[in-house]
Length: 324
Image (cartoon, rainbow, N blue to C red; front, side, top):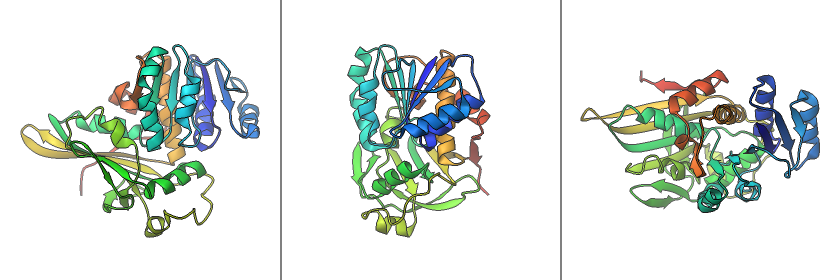
């Protein structure tokens, strides 16, 4: 399996590192490209074969888009090819919306585009499906995330906080970003954090699995300064690598004629978590366990239990909140 990694930032470099350190017989080549050629060259020199420098014209069975959010839909359209699989890590509403709108063209190419292959959306969607397995009827799904993967991710989150949030309430509703404060408990060491509405694509993908739910929402952790400065340029340069991160999914519904809820989550540096999600998806693709064509979300093409076991093998362990 030939793999093309587009983008050598925190997530792209993390994917290359995990592939290089855990060689698979199904992976014959990992080609890396970046706007800054030195980044791709550095990764190829650091890890050696099967990691090499590449180009957009390189033949590849799987393309991993790890560029800045907002540019990935255009790249996905350009890189479509017969039988190709494209894994897009973007958490941009515009990116995901455009990709979903490409469904017909992707099917004609007999290709598969998996949107939102990251911490959230991505791992969050699979956690939601896993949590929902114990319910007879799901009425609500709520996602919250903490932390950013790197500079590009931090800028995207800054924009998201000042943009309109999309929620599913039996139909699509828009809400102001930075509103809807809610105290959410994440797995340690993050613990409690105030979370707010933001322009996050999670509901757009989750509604495909939970179309009968009454409410589907997504929030992100932010400080008071984050909220008040979200309408301005970033006041200071973002950290070169994401530090602490976590994702939390709460599913509510009916079980045995009683109302119940379940909360699952995971923690880790967001860039590391996103890379683990991508590599786990690659393992399932290499094993022939991901099939189909068109544009889908990650939870639509993987078995939740099997996928979470794979992610745990890469150091991202799912946890359940049982209360105090």
